[in-house]
Image 1: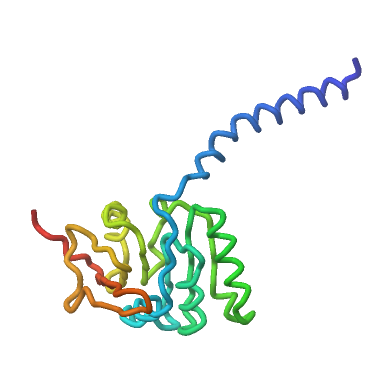
Image 2: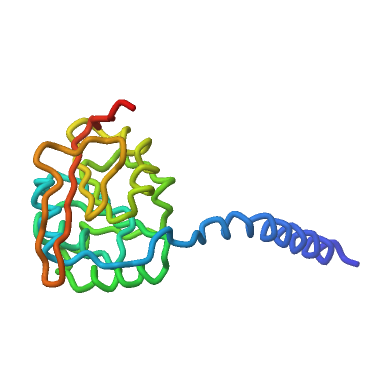
Length: 194
């Protein structure tokens, strides 16, 4: 056997080992969603961004972005830099499709990523939006505590047990089908004593 044949066989074996070792880590990224997708009505999206006083100086993170309506609205209406994160490939596709409906200059403000929200570094955000179950909001507290002072966290329908919302919250937002609740917290979080 010639030397280049042996080299090719060794190279192929090395590539095979690398591929097999890499497989488990790629499977870890295919996390199942923790909640079913229920879109936030546009009236509620508008109110969430309004109460957070979003501006063009803000960086908005939508954790569990669904179809991307919150990040697209933040970018279109307020010119905010907006990031949507979700683990569901279908939701990522829908978010990207909605992003493409925006003007080209506004599209540059929107980033959609397939990431596990419980492993995200939130330090660049100063507005975080949520439509997750209460237990999942609580699970995010350690990450949310690390946000810069003055950052705003806004949740559709669900509270965050153990953390006192800002004065005047929750508020009710009426939509076509029902009333919705909006909660807001400003960092540093007001952790309740047990």
